[in-house]
Image 1 (spheres, rainbow, N blue to C red):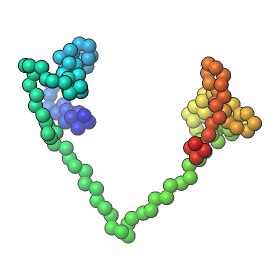
Image 2: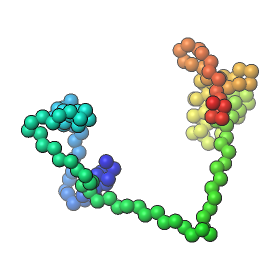
Image 3: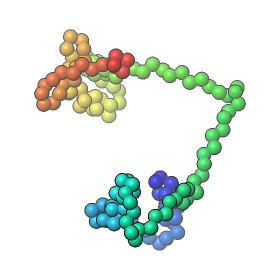
Image 4: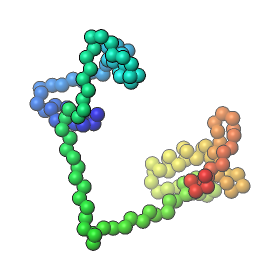
Length: 140
């Protein structure tokens, strides 16, 4: 679908004006019926012609990925992922916040859902007041 949108974007400059209208499915019954027939693989009703497209109707530029010579290859070693709970624990115990104002506001807002119980970070559910223990992905 992105390739078709890109083709349309290329042609926009060749017109004086262009308008896009979104047609809600409820107002486009014939297209809706055809899509249901296609997805259910039901028999095609008489008067409807089927054309199977075996190739894309637009030309896509293929991205060619070049492999660098062996002396230019770099080994990427994943860094250990920081524990996501640390920021909440620091904020709840010592009110320590990040330097970035946006991150600080986000942390303060999100921390309202968390509480420390015996040094463990727990998430409070909004309605029932149930506490859920927060764990890392390694502990799953």
